[in-house]
Length: 420
Image 1 (cartoon, helix red, strand yellow):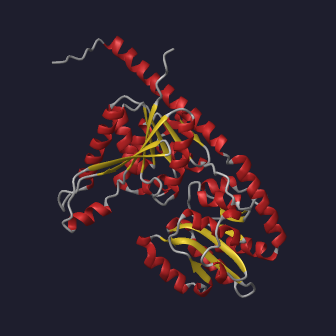
Image 2 (cartoon, rainbow, N blue to C red):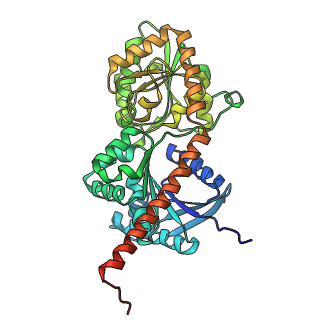
Image 3 (cartoon, rainbow, N blue to C red):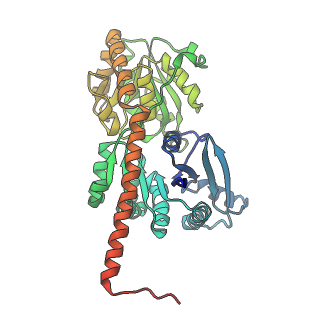
């Protein structure tokens, strides 16, 4: 009996473990789901923002283009790097190199479908190659790509083109899907929105974290790479307003984004609350998870945020969540049922919610248990895997319909291509 060949997927992403970051963590989880569904999974990792390359060129540290291929738990990982040839190189020089490398990978492995994570960095290049090769392509919008980078005049046209030419587009929140449909209305029938899943975590097995002895009073915590979208200004203001009547510690598990460090350090110094803030700095995911049992209230007052894995991890740890009504945060957290929902950028709303939970430890416990139940029931790996199974089937079908339409047009146009 003839054995059916596995369909080959090429996922493109800006990060993949051991790289630190939520996108890489999600891509790893999804890649293993697709592997379990019977696909042969390849992941091409590269950055389309070239700070490192430009710094190398300025220092005279040149290099040729390279691809390092390894296997990680059944997944073939290709780490692509463009050549660094001269100091005046522009982004298109590097992108052209990466396109050539991705095309070479396709020539070697003969992929059946492409899948890009983060539409403005990976999506255009991946979609262009897929269309050139007449292959289906899925684009997955994760958050900042449509929440922030779409406002770049230099990137908007590429984002719009990529949305319009994707076989299928996925979103981690309905808000993101709504924005994409405003940009490219024709994608409404080729799109779906569903949340991230989270793998169960046993918190009892984690070691005692380094700063545990310094935590005092009620611990308000947040986890992530702290930058503009996280709404930290309002959290600083709320904690300062509460400190007169409550003993509390604000625990930031992670660090400030390097390009914004000056702003955040100044903001913290001016907050009047800096003496009650503990910042772990950049640490591993396992070390970050070890802090969750020490947090009493998990605060995520984001201004925009996709579907943050850190919040799902806090829910699994049965923490009381205070989150803003943006993107998947406001879709997953139901006010006073499995957490408290506040208006984004509203210090008064955030302060009131935190005060309520500071005064009601029993209610914190109840909301935490409800959050954990939500995570277990609505964010299981099985649910997300089924969603991806359907997405891939839809993407292959959408591409077949395009092929049939093109054949029909060719048959009736009276135009024939000549080779010679």
